[in-house]
Length: 164
Image (cartoon, rainbow, N blue to C red; front, side, top):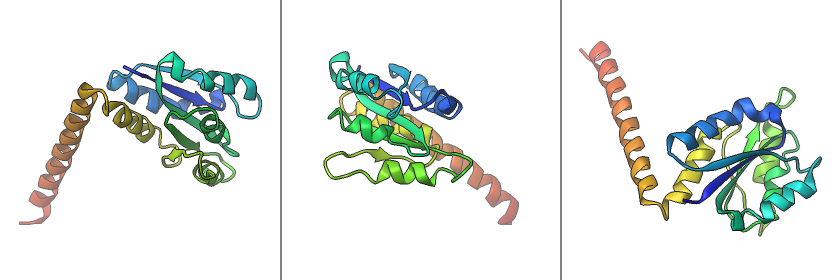
């Protein structure tokens, strides 16, 4: 199975990014986690990303806040799918990171999830890998069914309470 690279611009993003890591673990997807900054370690970040395909990576996840240029820098150095996670900050709530991540120029696509949407980033990576990994596809279907059952149980409780 291909690996997922989880790259964050700062280790201060780790408490938010850990949700992503936990989802990848839950699905049994191999991954590596790194701290590379688009601004402070651009050479090292580019080197890692340029070698990702040869190192058996299938998807790149880039999490960054504020200026959030990491996902774009990653996309500029690979043709692998890149998922950007805009990370919130106290100054702007993450809107700056969201716009920096989603507003990519033509030819440099970055799939962008919600601000701090780390679980969805991991799930999108799983969906991408599931195109060639039937066991992942099965796990995704099972998770959707479990989600459906959970909502229907809640619906039943609400109906019993209010619809008499």
